[in-house]
Image (tube, rainbow over all chains, first blue to last red; front, side):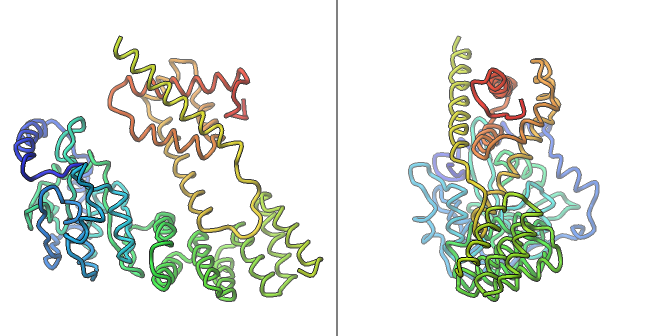
Length: 319
Length: 131
């Protein structure tokens, strides 16, 4: 987990870099090559997010510095120093990815881990979001971990611009970046204020981000984030169920029910949505509707047989 | 010698990890009753992802040739992935992710997979109910 670029590791890094650049000629960067061949129209002009702040790293603390960069850009008052105690582990001279994500949540932000696609990074940067990335500047068997922030790119030149360590505008070859990033398992994250959406079109991924954030973010922020998700993907049962459960947790039974009713009007294939709406209808005193919905849940998925029986027995015992 | 020992040690570790998964199976959740929580849903989505991750691993050409060399039908192996529990899938997916480079490691993992299929046929374990 140690970050590169400072003090004792400098010599090590230089040597690793020599070895690495020596090898790089015969190594491949398949995503860079493909992007440069295809030149997707929306990525064709160079982008530079010049107003992303710069937090030069101290010692091995590239984690706190990179995280402060993206949090500050999403309008959070933060310094790298205050993040040190939250994400920096002195014994490892570095920061764990999982702690980087957890800390973003503590600052009321949604950490959205992007797919392992260089195009996806460029797309988010083009849409105005700096991307937090992890790199292994060394070799797989001799790792030098590093966090940086992608703030710009130029597909024609084949370069990326990073806030990296002590360098505020570090222009790196896209192919070299791809290889160092691939050796850190293609880890890339955008930090979203609640309500802002990534360009990445993946409702399941967005649902997972929100479900993980539910315990940490403020309640009204979560409402905003869930609603934004349902608005973008109205046919996603996961997102509607998430919003419905979130509203139910606040005692808003009627609102929770209408979210699921709207989903079923768009797409009636989710057994879980029928099941949950059945329970909400029961709570709202609409017993016939509850039984109809529970029966439909069982028809869609036999695993809900017990639900129907439970609802029937609750109704017959007068609750 | 050294490498044989370390290979055996890693087989032991993999096997115990998989056994832990087998034990988790007995405490599997019963049919849902009441509302489905967001936590349950997110767990289901992760299991689905791990299942396709392990499935994609089995689709790799070098994995298929290693399986075939051991007389395991790839289609059968794919079908068996469908019946792994959440715990077993998580273990396997994590093993695939941390697989060091080199054919030795891959062979070890496949060896463990095959051993578990054989144990199943022998009735020692019951990971793959289809057998």
